Image (cartoon, rainbow, N blue to C red; front, side, top):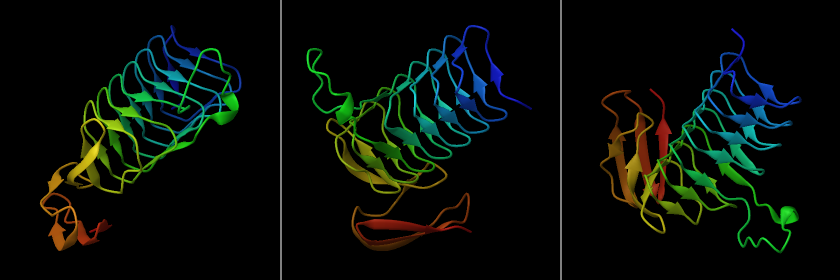
Length: 193
């Protein structure tokens, strides 16, 4: 099945959209954007030129994805969450040559109304809580919350809290997936079942 684009959406010539991706009401995908297969772009989404979006990505309503943002496979962007692409914007000072790259690794969740300040990496399967403001890199599997965002725990690939300390040594087996997690220092890794 090819992509499904709602009649009110605008997809510029030169945009590439993968099979089975759905583009909903009043969404604009600019020329040069590349969107993978099986994605969903909700109502009033904007995708800038040069944006790269992997497969099976879910972008909820009212999200703008600007130049310099890369979303790997299986990323979830909650309603009205925000990406920036310049650290010190001024209307009177052109800064298009100062855009900073933001990389969101596979499986990460970006909660509703959170803000991702440009120039950072969100680790694989990380979880950014609703309303958080991310001003630094987020490790894989980390749960971050607050303004500015701070790590408050760990999350599994299944999307549930892992009962391990923020640092030290420890192991956990997910009851849903049987994935095996190992904490070493400040790094959590997963061995898929």
